[in-house]
Image (cartoon, rainbow, N blue to C red; front, side):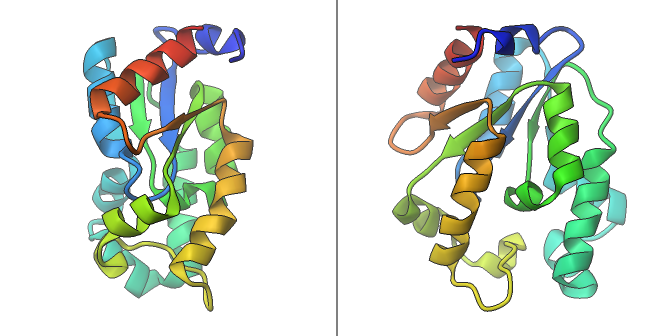
Length: 176
């Protein structure tokens, strides 16, 4: 663990959670925020509020590239402090958004295995899960893993442990 992570969390900073759909980003953002006495923000909900439509309808209306551009614009424009940010899984395709999140504080990759991802995902259309043309869900999973790992300051496995235990690992990892 990098000692510099603790310095990146202050009263002016944030912690951002990245990873696949079903990794527990929203659940853990709320839990971590309560423990830190901070706010939590789900960027998927922010995108919906900004655009005035659900993620599935936005993906259908804007197409893949337009949806990813909207996600990047919204997340790259974040101006929050003392916040735990739960991102959409496709934020990893948005370099400006990832750079903005990293500027706010550490990025935590919530890692899950393929079987857990497939079991938790459910209907990808209901979640507006971004699947590039011609790719299967396992292929999307495999393609994103190195992107998340490269962007992350800390990686924590979030399957097979309770949300409370995972939150404790994140806080311990950031503080160590």
